[in-house]
Image 1: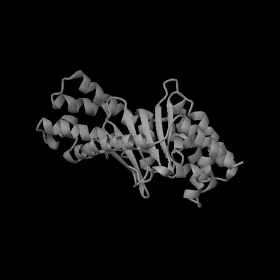
Image 2: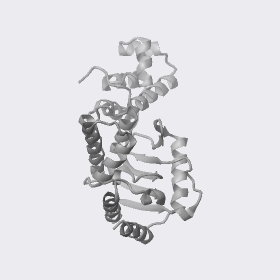
Image 3: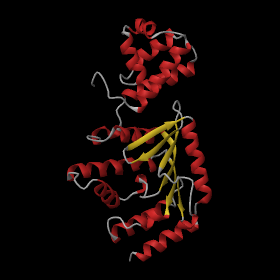
Image 4: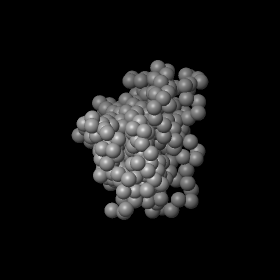
Length: 284
């Protein structure tokens, strides 16, 4: 295992907790550094997430800051273990943006995801052929081997849906995304049939924001919100043209509220099945 890892969302979250704990104890970077046998600049890098903290360093932080609460100690120890733990995706993420790795990690730790998509079918619900067409359209110069690696990564992410303890997934898809023929009629028809099948799974809820709904609560585009396992806070991911923005706290709460507003305007259950069936039939 390398001596250092690149900064990740989980390293940044851990570093934030360590900094807040040190400041609450009114200790300086040098104070903590003396306990860790590190200089102040190295401690600063740990707290920024640039140098992921190891479990012994986190335990030393807890001791020097006088934290005796067993729950608090267990939570931070778990976070430190997660920073250095390899995931199933490690062999598939060569040349993948760090923001996508953070997204995949959030999926792996989440108990539930609420997703709004306005231009494509959510990645967790895509067929292999649809995913290939979407990825190819986004980067026409992508080498074939890299394209297949990205497709395989997306297919592997979907295993969370059929896990013995599956994630709960609620999605709202804009009707325009369902009407856009991606990959040709045959690929799109298979994708719509796949959605109809998935809509019957007990852990998956599929809703449609119809064109007739008009203006809606997320005019700026797609987003996902994650309900996380302890010790992590709820988080949200916002898709932009230059990458993914991860938010937490009040900003994540605002995404939950936005999703609830979209949900109230969306079609569900039988209406969803009818729309998917009609769109599928038109492609025959």
